[in-house]
Image (cartoon, rainbow, N blue to C red):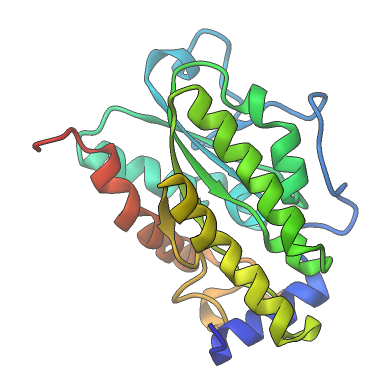
Amino acid sequence: MRSFAIAVTAAALLSFGCGRHDEPMARDAAAPAPATAAGGSAPEGSSRNSRPRIVVLGDSLTAGLGLAPADAYPSVLQRRLDDAGLNYQVENAGVSGDTSAGGASRIDWSLDGDVRILLVALGGNDALRGLPPESLERNLARIIERARQRGITVILAGMEAPPNYGAEYAKRFHDVYPTLAARYGVALVPFLLQGVAGIERLNQPDGIHPTAEGARILADNVWAVLEPIAAPQGS
């Protein structure tokens, strides 16, 4: 957890954040509708309703800031699902600058329709702003609970805090994710940026948002957990 790669990524988080500086900390129902993994808003009555959905709720790492829509990791996951013959539509519900509070505020309308799986990939901007880990835990718990009330399977993707706030804060922040995964019995991607954080060639010049190659590794990290969940039992 205290690796060099995480420290470099954390420093970049502190300098740049998981999104543009002019993005608000939280969004409400007036925010744009989530995009499909192909990068465009899902037309009414089209693919949004034609296949069961996997929603990826996140910030700019999920939205694919600085990348072509097809290179964002939710789009890579869509191709993996298609290649595996798994009949799901991935919906990219990433909003640049979003915190866990922002995700919690838009969770209900993000889960409209036939959503089967929710990947929660939030927390980078909470860490950037030094928000209390207790608030992160409370917001993520609310998201998980609302999804479970609808019978939706949840996958939680972990994030790390910058070292600037001290070792105690970093540990409390880190512990939120495995604690919630154990409490609710949900699957955990230990660290979304594993294998990408701190590796210059896998990150854009800001040092935090992955390149297309880096986004494919993020998809690898998620796919290892998502595939056995999405695949039919006994397959």
